[in-house]
Image 1 (cartoon, chains in turn red, green):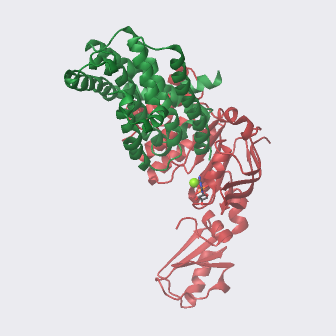
Image 2 (image 1 turned 90 degrees about the horizontal axis):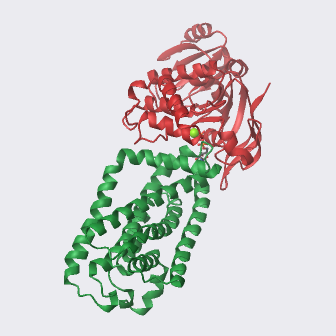
Image 3 (image 1 turned 180 degrees about the vertical axis):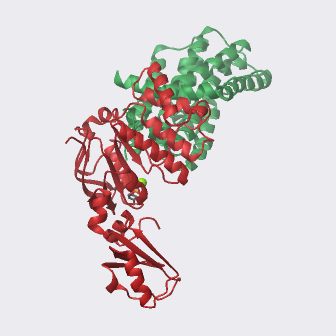
Length: 304
Length: 257
Ligand SMILES: Nc1ncnc2c1ncn2[C@@H]1O[C@H](COP(=O)(O)OP(=O)(O)O)[C@@H](O)[C@H]1O
Ligand SMILES: [Mg+2]
């Protein structure tokens, strides 16, 4: 299988600070690959190296089979980049943003006009085409940024936290667009600190923390490897002493306001807990998620 | 070739913006020379006796070619400070550009091309207004257009490079007050620098405005000699080259992180 990205022992320093501490990553053609990790994990730094904007401090990196240090412009010509922070030209219109970006890729004016019309439809921004960007909602700006990144028909699309800060409806709309791209055969690399986003979109992902990769696999593999089928959540009043329930579950995580009991049968454990006379404020049985994987691997929650 | 094409794409972006917002710039580009020439040249100038020191011409004609240069320098300052910082930090348009095949150096080239074209247009408008107001001594003043553009770029290129190193705009006020203001007032636009105390002169010779004013005025009155003229042009060109060289480094450092 062909790898679009190959990184070995890749590092990034900022002065004495090591933001990325030797990661190995392979991204295959056609898949949706994720970097899941909290703020400061080094996701954006990694994305900037893969997008051939920032140089690596150490290790090896190949993108589309080429060396970013030598062939940066050639590689970038075939990438689409959605940065963490929107950098649209807010004083231009929606359509102008798309057309101008096409010109950066050396496309003819005619081709830019056609492509802009096509992408306006894809981003569902047709009725805003000739409005200025500034007053658009966050979700619309994000869709425009994604549309803009597609202007050169990229083989590999890099999305740095595509839905951070958006409301649920706007997120679902965006996910829908990304599914469509995946179906069209575009390889996606997505960073996120939302485990539901990683589960929804990614075929394969790495869990990143403190500049290192803690685990790698498909969402379901990771869950079965690092967690149990079900989780029983017991919520207690703040400050209350939490009972010792280790013996009822495979593993127990103690969070400030609740206990997480990892087990293959949550209802059964809940019944046993009630038999013991333990009275949580609230109880909930749910399926394990990547959040649990992250907690297991790092001892911390993803979003606090 | 590739570089030219890429820089041209960046230029087009500025042009697209300009097409939407040209009115504001155009009004100030037209009103500023009218106000300056009428108030200082014709109004104040009517009280100024022409002396041999200013070549025996009416004060407004003495002033006009120099004001083209001074306005170009003010325009250069304006285009090389907040606008540059914004494209790194606020609008982030440079950040967007380097995610495409365009390199940081090409971003800088396109910016300098844009500033150069703006300065040229401003200077041309100024000369046109001067001609209408009878402030042009002769057709030589047409040469003030490219010369003022060159002088403006000689200030702009190092300033753009400097702006690329800043995280906040506080330093700009200092530049306006302690560099642009003295350059406007004391480098020969309003009175010959021979009136200044001698110890100040070496400082004056360092400014792009003095070289620009010497050139523009000499061209307007046809009194330019080849040797000093080449010297002025060489100095201004050197400032552009050095400024762009630093700009390439600083743009790369700033954008390739
Ligand atoms: N340009 C920079 N200069 C210095 N430190 C940086 C820079 N960019 C990122 N960092 C630091 O590197 C670490 C990783 O940042 P980043 O890659 O943005 O993580 P993430 O995207 O996962 O939140 C953070 O501690 C951040 O402060
Ligand atoms: Mg980030």
